[in-house]
Every structure is written in structure tokens, then in C-alpha cells.
Image (cartoon, rainbow, N blue to C red; front, side, top):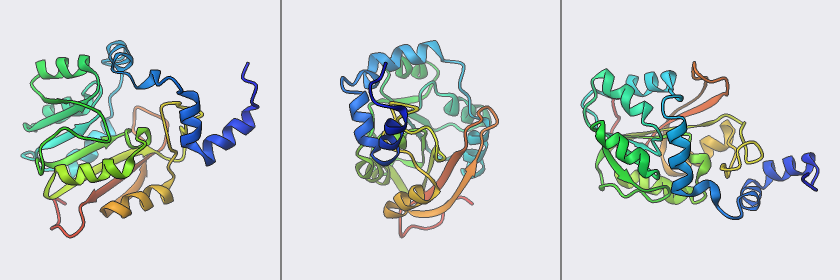
Length: 221
């Protein structure tokens, strides 16, 4: 039994999420590549995001070079490929996922946020789906995304909308709401739009932020 009452743990999780995250993940077991290898192998065909996929496709032309960061089982990449996109890349910590998605024809980069081992100015669009809430050094992460975007490129961020903080998901280091999400994005990017959505396969609310580096021309509408 946990000696700290749930109400106190919940307060710490909400007001000091990084402290809570570090305390419950003292030995870092959730962040090892082996952990993600096993988790993805067990759930390879279970997670698909049709609403997210439609939003990404709505805002990108078919010839766009797209990178999906922490792409997991590659469900977004596979959906885009089925829609006719051809220049698709993923970045993933799991060697299992990297190997399997390479076999499916995607360009894959082994690695994990905040640093992105990808070319400078290599992508028209970058997807960060359900990853920002996992990243401690988020300012570094945002700068890496800006480095990897082509001039006029754009990025798509998806995070849980005021839910799934570290007390619910120990791998999470922060819980965003609309205000804090917009404030973070605006510090690094020109914010095009922010909206709360629900993917048709999941009940949790999701914040969708569409951004571009400041002082660039407008991307595909």
C-alpha cells in the first residue's frame, strides 16, 4: 500500500508533475528501449488514430516530406501512405519498431526526444503525437523541430487535454490544458490554430496545435 494518501499524490502530480514523475520512475524502467520493444510488439495493430490522420492529411499536400516523431507502431505513417503520400519518415526509440517499419518501406531514424537525429531543414511537416507530455527538456525539443523543418514548414502537436497527468500515466512529465499548451507553443512558434478534439477511436480529449516557425511564409491551408 502506498503510504502517501491519494489526494496528496494527486496534488503533487498536478502542481509539481516533473517531481512526481521522477519520484515514481526512479529507476527509469519506462524509458528503456527494451520496454518499448515489448510494449509495441504486444500492441502493434491496436492503436490507430483516424481523426488525427484526417487532420494531418487536410493540412499537407501529397508531396510533403513528413516526419512522425516517436511514431510507435507507425499507424499514422501507414495511413498517410495509403492516402498516397510517398516521402514518409519516422523516429522511434524502439529497435523493434524501426526494423519493422523499415521493412514496410519507411525511412526510419533510431533515437528519442528531445534530440532528433535527422537532417537540418529536411521536412515540410513534423508530427509530435502524444509525445510532448513525455519530454522533460521541451524547449530543446521545440528547437530541434524548428531545425528539422524546411522554410515554410509546419508542425502538428497532439497532447491530452487537461488529463492523463503523471499520476495517471507515470511516463508523463507534464499535464497540459489549453492555456499552458498555447503558451508553450507560442514561446517557440507562430501558432496557426489550437483546438480540442476527440479521436473517434478514443474517449480522451486531445489538444491539437498547428504551428510554424516564426517569420516564414504560410504553408498549405
